[in-house]
Each structure stands twice: as C-alpha cells, then as structure tokens.
Length: 117
Image (cartoon, rainbow, N blue to C red; front, side):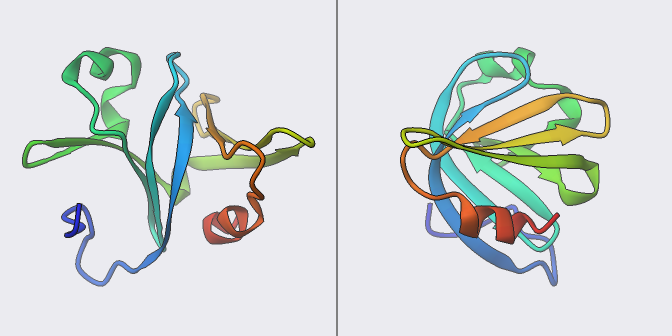
C-alpha cells in the first residue's frame, strides 16, 4: 500500500516492519506493522472473519482495508523477549489483553524504541 490512509493530520510515521502478529483472540497473521508517534497500525489485509477475534475498539476500516490499530496510550506494558531463534515484543493493553509481535530471528530493538514505552 503506497498511501498511508490511516495517518491523522500531524501524525508522523516512525517506521514499518513486516512481522508476525498474534492477537489476543488467537491466530497468527503475517503483515506490516506501521508505528507512528501516536499508534501502532497492523495491516495483514484481514478478511472480515478475523474481526470477531479482535475487539471492535482495536479495528480500523479505511476504504476496503481493515487494520488493527493500538493507540500508544492503551499500552500498559511492553515486554521484549529474546532467545536465539525468537525475538518478540509482547504488549499488554490497559484491559490486560496481550498482543504479540514476533520478528523471528531478527532484532526487535528498533521496533521497541519506536514504540517508546
């Protein structure tokens, strides 16, 4: 997607990662995580059947695209887990839901810095 329609006025994109996302409701999705100064937006080009797995307040529909959008002020805790074969960021939201971003063997250091908690 060339144009980032989900950006609000005065919102700045920090960076984008292709990463595996494991939402609180289950499942595993490969897609792009866009981190802005205000939120995390995950684009896996979801079909609408996944909508039942992710709470309504975290979904954002722009045109024909559905995204998961997590406002940074909803994040209560960020845990960075790192082993030789698996690097993950686990976000705990203000309602205690856990959302996992798995980058495989690649470092999540820059992603953690972009999230900035």
